[in-house]
Length: 177
Image 1 (cartoon, rainbow, N blue to C red):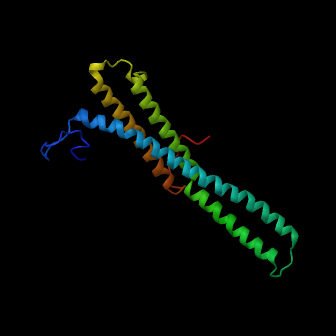
Image 2: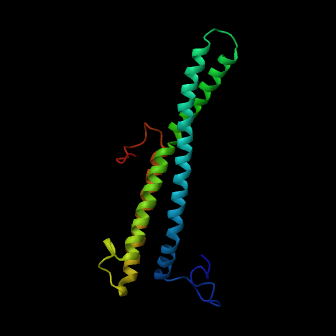
């Protein structure tokens, strides 16, 4: 963190270390970027998932249609097409199952929503933050920072579970709808 990022006035010694309150305030401002990054990643995974699912659906249907056109054991365009479509659908199904794009999208969006809810509660002084007075803003900011970090840690835990092979991954408890 640079001195200017920490809110230090110009001409302050390079040994300047921002106070806890300043660091928490900076953290609060940084959370908006975290929310947006989760939403961007969620949209990306959702788009990839939908593309692969569409490829699987269309590929499966096309394979059936082409197979119905010609069943002889010759190298015809139909046989080559069946092999090509079958290969593509298999690869798409493998990527979808292995990378779990839908689950990643769901969990990232869930985390972004939870952090956004925390930001709104803090900003409006409701929920966990309703009993804090203006003089206790530093305590509210402390609680806010802790809550956001809890959401981020939960997201990292879920991400790690998705990266484990199915036989090693413990049950998640929360499954996408």
